Length: 535
Image (tube, rainbow, N blue to C red):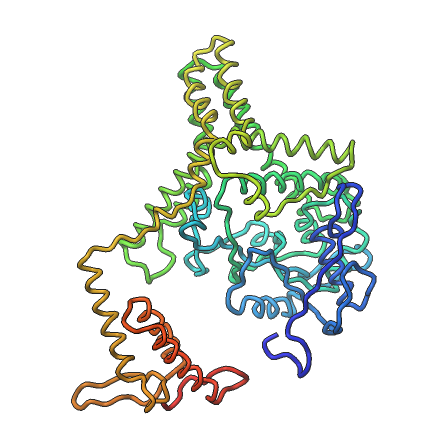
């Protein structure tokens, strides 16, 4: 795409027409994202019998790999090129077994590591910061280990990565019925073999609102339970390890339900002291994962960190881990209700109605759908309120002294919608930078002196380009050379000088126009500026 063939377009816009889906009762793209990728693969192999609208120009031939991303996913530098290199390595090339109809060696899919983006202001919230605490691009500082990949050489595909077109299509051909699979990523990774690549990173936005995150988890749970047919049928072609992954996902969706049931049982059947001990044990079970992370972070991963910086980061991990467990407890009742709803809804659709199995709402749609006020959250999380009252009523009616323990948790669960609304609010107030008047004066002085440099030396004599430096002693000398970095800093300085009122708008436009005119006439390599130029 950077250097296209002469006369060939740089980008292609592919758009599918909508078809009426009777099972969904809606006009939609065939099979949603799964169908989109399948039809794209067919189109790349010359099959025009797809729902893609006709193109004015032919697509490139012999496309080997496709990179699939979500709308809110951003790639890091050289991520795609690195993934292609890894997938082309002889040990990683996919080997398809035609008799078994699966990839038996190598990989057809590479799944990069996903990291939450760094956000601030309206794009951040307390909820987001707690549940996406470890964010960064250094693989040595933010190391990731995956049990399935490290021990079994088999990763899990989450829908964002690079895949080999032919091997991917061969492994999935005729495997999935229409209108049956929502969470197709794990199934595709199981049949085509996926590898987790932890040293290549993609950046993705984490939901700022609890309501959006809850909607996402509800969809994931429904998708996991729709894979029951592949889990229970050994003839489905899904490897045993992948079936175990699917079963483990079901276990994960059942965890909040059994946690709440265990808590209510303890409050009802045990006296106060034992009920408190039982509840403490349940809470400690939630601390296991954060504790392992903190223990793993005790020793610094990089020698570049100072002791103060390391212990500051460790304290932050402890604080975020504690906050995460506290919020999980507060939101546990709603999670239990939500998972129960997802499971019952899916089983009914799967075995009775056969309708709405492809129900899907994007994160942006979920974000726009509801308000972020307390009333909206009580309307969404009414199940938590019901569980709170029922969880308190059962031990009270059973005349158990464990009701004293139940009271505090019932209080949290009944108030959880208000807490969810509060933690989902914009963190804009936390991001305000307060600077003292003395610091403001110092920074303005430095800024004004910096602008004085550009104002003095960016002249027609230097073709309106910023010289690299000025030497004051032993004799005044201006270095008559510049670089793209210098030019960029100068152009930003012009804008800042206008913002500060040091130059007029017309002066700023004149300066920028003069510099851009010089840049247009400078020699380049394939459109790129050279590292240095004489001014």
